[in-house]
Image 1 (cartoon, rainbow, N blue to C red):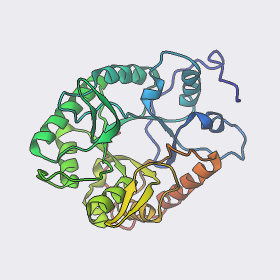
Image 2: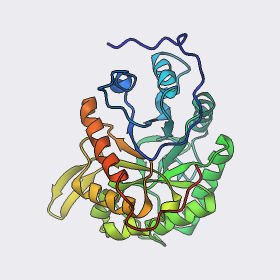
Image 3: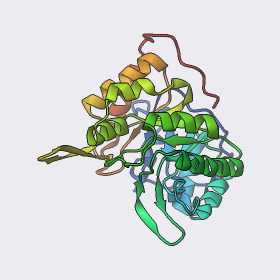
Length: 304
């Protein structure tokens, strides 16, 4: 078991930094010691991302590790519990705790999901879809405004992985996202794996989806693996973040980066956590694509 960092060795507060346009990792506790390894042979990510809900406790080993890591790496907070799409409004308890963590760690980026996961009475262990209507757009925009006012910063919203569509949808997912970012003043966390998952499950054109996203609203990219269930009606993709990135997702990512230019890109791996070298090999693949020359004019600059 690696030694827990001594909080008295380095008490410097983390310095707010923008995310570099290179590969990062979703940080898990099994890899804490790897990212702090000073061995020259150890591959290191350019930045790390954590779920702030995992650090809601006031102290303990997790905070000592994160304090040490935040002193070395730019940090991104990827929330999974604000439930911005809930008809009852967002989860204010989570928001207050995230605000306290932002004050403590000064992350370069904060994000959540285009979804809901509870109401005033219940919490659900999933990210549930919302209908793409004007009413939902106005509601979601208002909830984002509450978050941004409390955190005193713009946030990113992640496009969802979907397994169904609503009959009452009034616009496409990409139109909904584009209008939301414009009206709420937020950015997009563009999950390319979710494009493959959603397009396969609900019958969308993947390339058209990629091409419909304005690079100027994208502040961060996620890449991950998924599972496949075979059914008589066709394949069902499950967004489980438990394997290497698929060839299709890599192709979609390359298509977007060739148009957009380099953007901070995360390898997300949340189940069946691999050895550190396996994770960093995926980061290496992303960095190769990020280093390739643009095929078209560079994207607009998103302030971040």
